[in-house]
Length: 380
Ligand SMILES: NC(=O)c1ccc[n+]([C@@H]2O[C@H](COP(=O)([O-])OP(=O)(O)OC[C@H]3O[C@@H](n4cnc5c(N)ncnc54)[C@H](O)[C@@H]3O)[C@@H](O)[C@H]2O)c1
Image 1: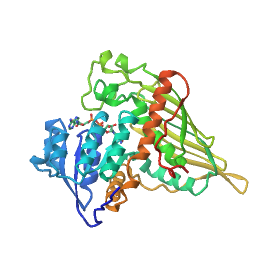
Image 2: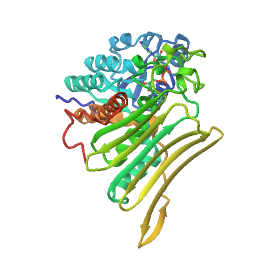
Image 3: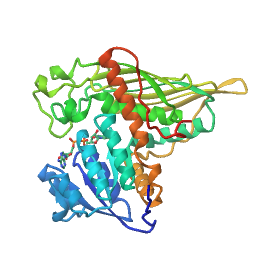
Image 4: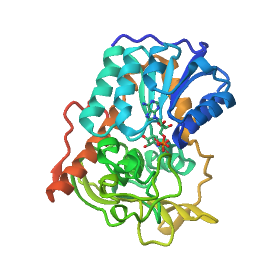
């Protein structure tokens, strides 16, 4: 791959596709960067396109209803994709072909085969391809990662992670709840964040097999809708919801470790609950957050022992990075010139695991995760 770095001092022209919650995070992040000019925006909601265009000083000729026109305008160096999942790959491949560095929202694509085309395009055109896993930029995840890497928990062999919502089906009846446009339900949407966080904390072990199950006991009956999401419908028909609303998975890791994963858009629980817990030979740790809107909680607990005495550690947690840090790191990768280190291959691994989970759920048996083409050295 030929690598041509943008010199660190070069200003970068940025664009965003998508005007929903995700697109707005990327817009705010680019706008906060002194060495970035936010110059282009695409989205189909004409009123919001005009409003956001005005707010961010994007000229009318660089506001587009369709992403093709943004890419064809050749006006940007870097592009964030915050559009429906089935558009991630077409937009990314077209942008990479046009020489544009790409930061795509998660999940990478509707399946791993399509995600692979994005990685291939990044290699072919020697450009950065990153996927926005902003939750790993939480302060508690960063501090726990640092402590695990320093050996505080010893050999970590078991983890469990989950994101369960009380009533949180996004965009009920929109692209979110149709497999053809989203690729899947909560496993694809929020489970992938928890999978990313867990694998990141565990040091990228290879997931060898998946045993999973999926259920849909809320969405098909019009229950469990979140009060947000562009294009959501108040009445849904069977055609509007053909994904799961609960997914559970048991993942085997290379070296004998295991990871339990659950994700749900709607469940009979008192409030939204998110957690990732890791257990090692010398200690264990749990990050949790959730709660009622008016009574949120977030906790990081680390339990170990000191000189034979059971002990709890209370590390000072740095501020959350989330989307801002994701965008800043993406810009850093573009400026570094080390494009081959940022080719989307880590996100592709997540897509392969999610594919295996859906295959396992469909076949009702354990399924091997396909890892052909994984770069050596990425596994600790
Ligand atoms: N990382 C996170 O925390 C996070 C949170 C929410 C959503 N997401 C991801 O971001 C993506 C978008 O999610 P959202 O909730 O913002 O969705 P949304 O439905 O609210 O917004 C989608 C946007 O894409 C635009 N779009 C659709 N087709 C287009 C086209 N042909 N040309 C130009 N624009 C087009 C729509 O007009 C809309 O503005 C999804 O992949 C989702 O999984 C990530």
